[in-house]
Image 1 (cartoon, rainbow, N blue to C red):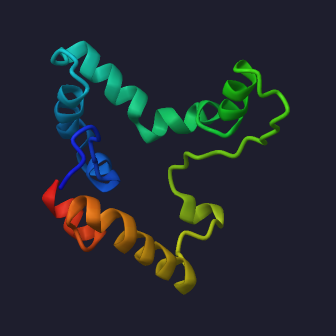
Image 2 (image 1 turned 30 degrees about the vertical axis):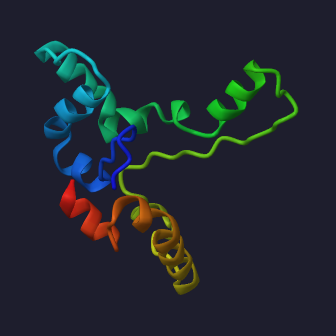
Length: 128
C-alpha cells in the first residue's frame, strides 16, 4: 500500500515537466489552485538555473544554521553545493559502484517494496 501522508514525485518527472507536476503537488499540500503569476514564480524558483545561481541557499550551511537556531551550536557543517546544472562536467563521480548498488537494492527490498508493493524504482515511477 502507498503511504497516504507522503507525496511521491519522481525527480525525472520534475525535470521533464515541472509545470505539469505542480498541480498535483499543490493539491496534495491542500493549497488553492495556482494562478498564472504564482505558477510562474514557482517555476522560476524551482529552475536549475535559479537554484544554481543561489546555491548557498541549498548547501549544508543551512542545516548548521537551523541547528544553531535551536541551540545546537556545537555542530559544525561546511557548506557543500547540492545544485549543479551538469555535474558530469565538474569531475564528480555520478555512477554508483557495485557495492553501493547492492546496498540500495537490499534497502529497497527491505523498506520500500513492503510499503509500495513495487519491486523496483522503475516500477514505482511507472505507477506515479
